[in-house]
Image (cartoon, rainbow, N blue to C red; front, side, top):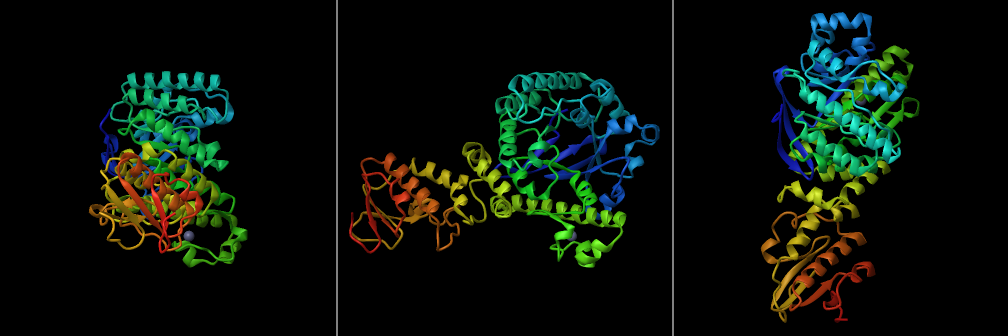
Length: 491
Ligand SMILES: [Zn+2]
């Protein structure tokens, strides 16, 4: 099946979209979060997850259901929706996770897909081979080829209206991820989970996660929805969405609750370390930290799971809202200030200027400069590309201060963008808000803009009046440009 996913709007590579799931007779808004439901151990029951948290999708494991005496028959007889009491979209995993954990499983792709179809799964998954990070290239290539054969097999099977996942593997070898993305896209399957990133996530290697996702997306193209498989911590939803991921799944809400771990958008807290509950959810407004600690273990796990899921869905809504308003970069930048691993991931993302700029809208509501990293956003590079195409007047003053009569023309100087011609002063992103106390990166990027303009206009006399730029920025300004500090004589 193809054509089940439609992107409604972009912000950078982040996107809001609609995933149509024919078997569930519904359309789900993305980015979406699928709570993971262990069919044996339901920390929160799926009906509560649906009614209290608004979950439209969940994911459960068909391999566990098939292998379990007390679940297999009910699932086949009632269907997985009635068995779990969940009316939304149910995606099923295939046992690949068990394959990665225990080294062997006794089921084939053909068999598990037939079982997933028989129990009424809305989104099925072939048995892929999850290759861990950092393995030798030969192994990664071999296992990736095995996964691809199974995707090709799945694409040839009649699975009715059930959508199919096409997991993308390749370990940390980016060319293999790109190839896997390309070949997964060519199968005609529906959703591309980026597989085996859990070890990277648990080690907080978010920059590597970003590189793996972006490599996958270079192969996949824009049409396929992307599931960041195993990414359930709300601290990285903004980063995941900004890399163009559409689906997240959370086992974390329940697993962390079991160990008295309390999720926040800035990281994880141990309940024992909390004097206060820094959250507005019903659990945290109805209880103090001491009360939660004093609750018996089973009830405490339940309450913490509810908090953890509330925080996760809250952040997901924040991400959707940010994409709609065009301020996903601002949200991500504030998350990057909450944890160094997210900052690393954000900086890794900003290095992929071309990929980011390809879908970033030309106009948005506002551009807020929040740190030196804001200077590396694609809006700044896009302005520089525009400067390289502009005809500069023969005798031009670019100034941070007021115009001077002895020049033919005067353009504004606005760090981090650089020279701004009069026609653009009121256009996005040049209307962006910057602090009065800028860092050197803003001036360096403005100097990049001056260089691009000067290089494109070798016959123009350009004079720059700046407001005390650091040497790191002045070193970038080409020799042909006359430079003065505002209020001083030319150098
Ligand atoms: Zn809470």
